[in-house]
Amino acid sequence: MSEIHPTFLIIIFIAFWAVASCLISILGGWFKMATRFPMKENIGRRIQSYSWKSLKFNYFTSYGSCVNIMITEGGIILKTSFIFSILHNPIFIPWGSISDLTFKNGLIKRAIIKVGNNRLVVYGKVAKIVNDLFFSQK
Image 1 (cartoon, rainbow, N blue to C red):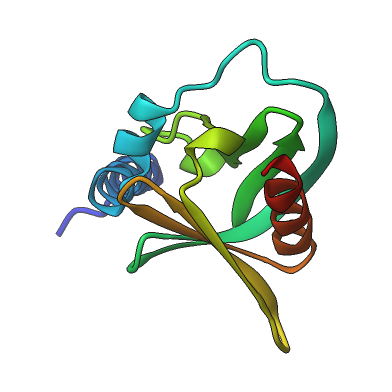
Image 2: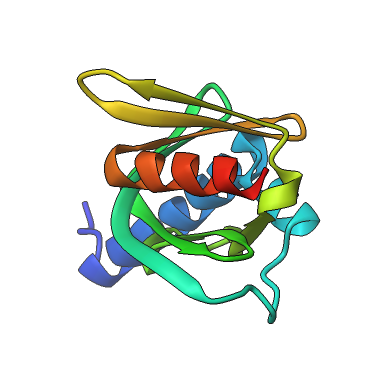
């Protein structure tokens, strides 16, 4: 019986990772939202950046500690970390595109953001600043 070469296993792992990342993006809604809200040049002054944050995307996709979130005067920028970047282009959500925002101030602060048919949930300090800036825009 022949042994499997370690290089082959690495290639299989990378291929599996790429396919999984693509499926999560397409089925979870990130790909469609990134097409609708692509990254823009004129995003306004950066207010705050948060690295390695968690994000719930729609009802069944969670990005645990792998999303970088930037809050700007113009809106919210979402970028996944490099290892999840396949079919996960950056998203720029202008403040005016947010149709509803609900802030929950319990044990874990969270902001439920409604953008079109998408539902995003951010947590902690990100939730607080998104809530404050969203309602200051109105």
